[in-house]
Amino acid sequence: MKLMPDFSNLNRRKLVWASFTAIAVVFLGTLPFYYDVHNGQLGIFFFTVFIYGIVGQGWNLVAGYTGQISLGQNAFFGLGAFTTALLWVYGVTHTGYWFDPVLIILSGVTPIILAVIVGLPLLSRLRGDYFSFGTLGMGMIVSVLFLNGGDLTGGSEGKLLIKYMPEGVAFNLRTHYWVAFLAAVFATAVVYFMTTSRVGLALKAIREDEVSAASHGVNVLKYKIIAFAVAASLAGIAGSIYTYYLLHPMPMNVFAQNWLFIPILMVVLGGTGTMLGPWLGALVIYAIAWYGDKFFAGWHPVILGVIIILVMRFLPSGIVGLGDKATGLSRRGSAGRG
Image 1: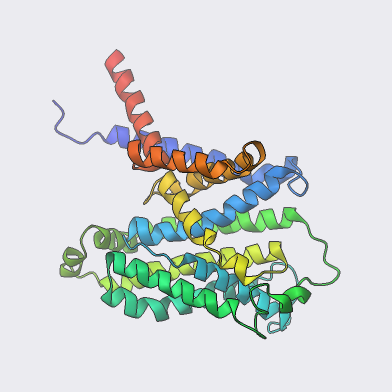
Image 2: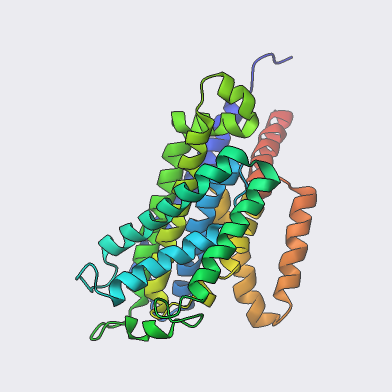
């Protein structure tokens, strides 16, 4: 009889996932060197996966690691998108070149301001479903303000931003791919270092039991706002990069509900509270949407819905949980044969 935890099995799982991550990063990082991402389908496919994955990674930090279900990510995404668009159109930074790092950084900072303003009253007084509906209401308010923005945003179609595309710049999806890939790596690194530090311990303690965490000296409101603000910033950065792809962002597009619910579905399918879950879920769900629309036009939402129901019924820990089970079964099988 074993009285000690099976650390060898835990190390095996970490090694498997670390190897999988390294292979994926090398493959995606070198893809433009041997594949024409500008003209090939994989270019726009992975670019979109990166954008959704960044938003999902931020939501995962709030929901998966802190236990707070936020329903306002689309507001932060749209705010980041319009921060980039409006600052460029009105020449605030006086730069005007592609993927201006100043604009991208500002597009990540603006949602932080909103997250702190909204998070202080919501996170200090609301929990559970009440907090979720509070963030949903915040998202609806921000969306309506931009949809009816008039002279500032050009209404739901953003007509005043038609001049947004700069003259003399050639559109090249290869550049978009690189920037989105680097942003995806950055988002994952931020969440990784946060969740493996003392901040991560505090977030997980809050997720398990707020009262117990507070009794042990954890400033619950402080860490909740930190997670909420970081998630908002990541969504804003994703919105900024997506604006460079759209060239003419419209409130009806960048504040759409798909920037809220699809990242949530991706995280749940991949594995909530895990580092790779958002990316695995993003790959699977967008692959179904991408290829399902081509081969089963109009039916891919049904296929996706069935898959999600099956996963929630038989694999509540997501695809990452399936990988962990496979690793554990493989080891037990080899031990049994021995």
